[in-house]
Amino acid sequence: MNHKTTDDLLPVTVPPLAFDVDARLQAIDHASLNRYRLSRLRGELERLDYMGAVLSDPMNIHYATASRNMPIWTMHAPGRYAFVATDGPVVLFEFSACRNAMPRLEIVDEVRTGISTFYLFAGPRSNERATEWTQQISDLVNQYGRRNRRLAIDRCEPWLARQLLASCIELFDAQEPLEQARRIKSPEEIACLQLAMDVCDLGVSRMREALHAGVTENQLWSVFHSTNIAHGGDFIECKLFASGPRTFPWFHECSNRTIEAGDLIAFDTDMIGPGGYLADISRSYLCPGRKPTANQGNLHALAREQVFHNTRLIEPGLSFREFAEKSWRIPQRFYPNRYMVLVHGVGLTDEFPAVLCDGEQQQSGYDGIFEENMVVSVESYLGDADGGEGVKLEEQVLITQKGAVAFSRNPLETSLEIK
Image 1 (cartoon, rainbow, N blue to C red):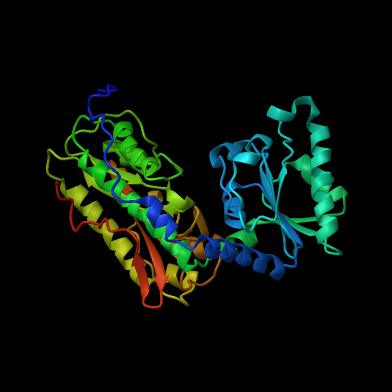
Image 2: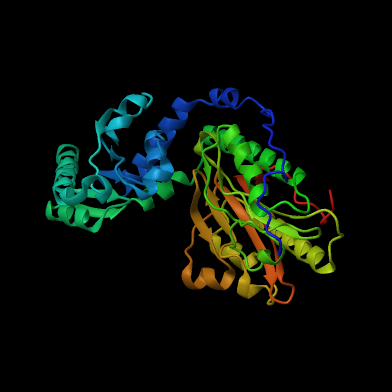
């Protein structure tokens, strides 16, 4: 296979912005959005009888405090965290160099300098820093927990956890209250999700326009990235883009493979857009220059059928297990390489719930119900070893009283038409 890496296969131009992202963001009532999210979290903390939470996951910090700062960096280099009292203040611990650069946030009562305990910054003084960090958190628990010492925490190194436990603080998983809080979206969140999807749709359309024989997977995927960044987006969580024989099995990441005429391309957007919300759809297209094969057409038709069938099932009050039981039956030849979930929640990233296929849902899944104003993505991947290629489709939907409504205006075609 010829792997081209030259830059002359795509024009090096900067296309104009398709719409005014800032105007769209300013039209959203962010004060209401921030208060709603904090209230949801505090309601869950109170329900579970936790005195508060310490959050280091950048998605959780964003949800609780409306503060975003270097999320990719802090995913692997902790040192930025937040304390949320169930009845008390929100304290944001920021990198010292960033404190003066961060905007003032109405729901954050105090900004302090964080204590970095990881080795890059602490070095041989890690134990010393850990003791300082533990004292910092213990003081907050003592002050605002009163007699309640039940603390939710999402990330904590084992040695930090040991020190907190030694301070007679009970530790619990913060993901439960966070995931439960994030289930139901406010009107402002739904507006943020729609804005992210509008940028996503634009990126998908531009990528499809640039699809031709001779372009590499990485070059085509860069069109999507560029569109997101140019329109104020944050980042893309994965590199799930594949072409030709790399579409089977699923979960090959983007490469320098040159796309050929008649190849299927398949991708999953996983796009964190403007406002920090997720746009999560999947599409599969045919590279122009050759008609689709019967196998390609059949795969695409069946994947569409799965997405449409399962989307039509979703309505408020339907349980996850009932959904799994009624879901589209995956033909046996596709089952070994099926997608791992039928449906998953969507918000700042992939969220609760994750609904599995019928047999797996009964064995290892969990139950719950779909509710109005939840946002979920409906998944399909169909491919088998005999055909050597696969189709990935996914639709992100809002659950309303009347059923599921798609965010994307980029339709699932009725066939693999050559554009």
